[in-house]
Length: 120
Image 1 (cartoon, one colour):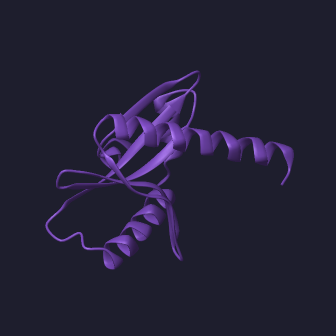
Image 2 (cartoon, rainbow, N blue to C red):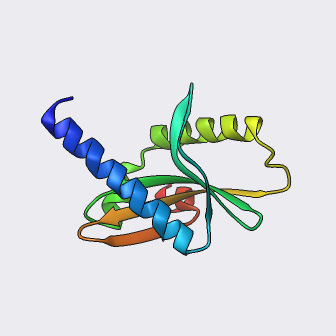
Image 3 (cartoon, rainbow, N blue to C red):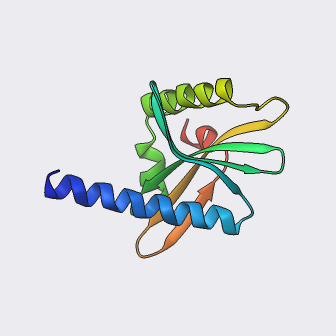
């Protein structure tokens, strides 16, 4: 793996780890990390009470940059992966949503619930 690509990958993995810890502190249970499907990947799938959230994690300097990086094609890919998860797991009667967690240096973490509505 090239040096810059590895650095970006490592930064993303650290951001996902921090996001998972942050969500656990907020009372979410981690159902899956890096959920891979034939149609895409979801960084985190979490549950709190009757809610299941499909979470994209972005490491950017600002929340605005993170929202801007969440392109329509990326949202569709995550939605297809979420449909795969729903089809293989019992999600009946649960509230479902798509969230975004941004991680900015040095350790600023922000959780945007229903991020798809904000990124539209």
